[in-house]
Every structure is written in structure tokens, then in C-alpha cells.
Amino acid sequence: MPIPPRVLTVAGSDSGGGAGIQADLKTMLALGVHGMSVLTAVTAQNSRGVQGAWELPAEAVRAQYRSVVDDIGVQAVKTGMLASAELVRTVAELLAGTPVPVVVDPVGISKHGDALLAASALDAVRTKLLPVATVATPNLDEVAWLTGLRVTSEEGMRRAADEVLAFGPRWALIKGGHLEGDAVDLLTDGTEEHWLRAPRHDNRHTHGTGCTLASAIASGLAKGRTVPEAVTEAKDYVTGAIAAGFPLGGGIGPVDHGW
Ligand code: PLP
Image (tube, rainbow, N blue to C red):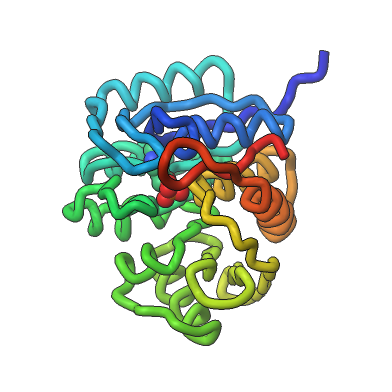
């Protein structure tokens, strides 16, 4: 029996099933890898927003990680909602020195404007988490939070990438989806530059986009793809998932992981 590549998500739960670890595990299933999870927080959440959030103790995060890594083994890691400065530091310590690729989605606030990370965690994200990242995947709101830059153009994305790379990730993927026009992302390691473009789908049901993209990148890296290959394939996958996003509940529905 062939053993599939194993990918670990370190992230929060979305009870509505559209984002967080639920999106991560669905993405991993769709892309043919074995998904595993270290839960950092539980949210009471639906298509209308986040109604409540509870973080787990750092000890519970450490224990889940050790259980998975010591027995099953991991070929790539993705981080999402980390809730607090303490959990950011805990996860960064666990991942420091890991030989496998780490995709960091620096999750700050949800599309509904709900905080998924304490404001006091900014320093830990910059100085502890980003340095352990193989790829960091901020959107433009997260870029503003991390660097203070308000990006309004593709040239601005280039400057943002330089500032994000200065925090230490090997690659920065600046997601320009919040700009007008095509959905344009910039992937760079400071030397190579890859502009990834996809037509904008006029679909408001995009809940879970960031989680899905980061998980798809981690899945590709676990399969042995290079970073540019993994990001290109992940962008194609998430573009299809957005195009097939569907209404659920009274608010913003999820992207479709199984399109
Ligand atoms: N809920 C959880 C647990 C998440 O991890 C995230 C994003 O990472 C979200 C919600 C936000 O999802 P979106 O902004 O796509 O609605």
C-alpha cells in the first residue's frame, strides 16, 4: 500500500466547516495527502462571522505536535490561526530547526472583521514565527498589519515583499486579491520573482480562501514540488475552489474544496 505524503496543519477550528482546520483537511484530502491537525483554538463560527473563540493551553498544542511528529512524521507544515502571542511563540519554538518546509499564513482578522489573533502577538509573529517560514502568505491587510504599508499597486506589492522577507521567511507570497482587476499574487525570494495571475471570479462565497491556498502549497511541498511549482499549482486549485464557492447560511459561503 503506498503511503501518501503527510501534512500537518497547526490552526484553529471553524465550526462552520469553511475555513480553519476543516478547510485545511478538506484541501489535503482533495490533493491526495494525509492531513493531520494540531488544534490551537476553537471558534464558534458560521457564514455570518465568528461568534466566539477559545484558545487551547500551550501545553495542549505542544502535546499534539509531539504525538504527530514522534510517531507518524510530517513532510510539510502549515500554520493558520494562532490566537495569542503565547501560542505564536510556542508554535515558533516547535518549528524552529524543523527539516521540513513550513508555510505560514499570518492570519490576523477574518473577512468579517473578527480578530483571530491578539494585537499583542504582532511582535512574536515578526520576530519568532516569520523567521521559521519557508513561505509566508500575507494578504494585503496582513501586509499592512505586519509592515505598516498600505499597498495599492503591483509596484507596492514588490516593496511589501521586500519588507516581509526582511523578517526572515525564505519566500514571500504577497496575495493581491484585494486589489481591483485580476487576482494577482507575487512570489519572491528576493532574487526570483513570479507574478501569478488569475481572472477574478465574481463570487462572494470565498470563505476559507487563505487557509485553502496555504494548505495546498504545503501539500505540494510535501509531494516534493519546488516552492514556485507548489505555489503555482496551489493558486490554480484555489482559483477553481473560489469559482465553485457556494452559498451556505445567510452570509458568506465557503469555497468548494472538491470542485
Ligand atoms: N476561522 C479560522 C479558524 C481561520 O483560521 C480563518 C483564516 O485563517 C478564518 C476563520 C477566516 O477565514 P476567511 O477570512 O476566509 O473568512
